[in-house]
Image (cartoon, rainbow, N blue to C red; front, top):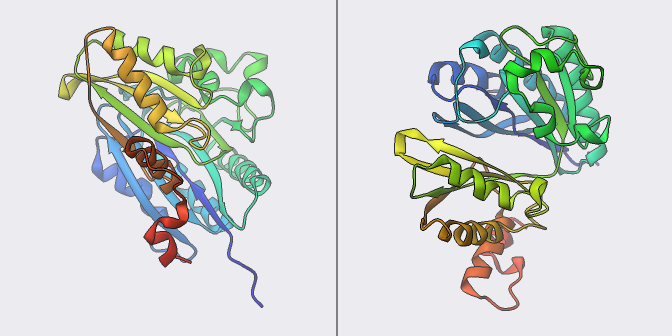
Length: 301
């Protein structure tokens, strides 16, 4: 009997959201290969960032990821990069997520193998983060990335910020990269009917865990200049324990203090079905609902 296929997910974030030609080249290693599938990639011009979702067998996925990081390092020059989203690398962050027949330990192992290979091949310093972190202060990506590309030049020389792999200096144009393993994350953004970035930043501060907010919520205020509005941009790090509707409702309450309203929200990349079911059940007030009642779930059994 053949062993069950192992499926790992990877959601790399690249610091390019405007040049379609460059984005196509960066995602090309994920196309046309057996054992790997490009599920989604979305770009944001304001954030100047592209988020890719790819799944596959661990070894094949890891090799394709190393290739994509090399292409991004060639095409993206962070000395000329501007965008609303914090960034420290051409390939900014690479999380590996166990999906099927794989453990978190295997995801951690793969992240370390890819980190080692990338550092050796492209001379890019790598920080291990989340479940792969080598110390508690490196678990949080925001702490590693603080100072961004510009500030990392000095920061990386400090003993406590020596990278886990690669040189103790940033790559001149590709910066530094964080690679790790984590739970599935939901990128959830809520838009407000104001152009006042200070308000979005204050609301973000109140709801994020680092400032006493929701345990599994990271949040920043973002200026969507082209639309003339601002956004509370969130990473929900464990949607099973901090539901999307909770942060949405709290943003609505906080916005009222300033006499403003929510004008919409967006989900970036792919989202676990349970995260949406949970929200639908809350707003519809459905009693005793089970995920087994979802028709598509039955079809997949």
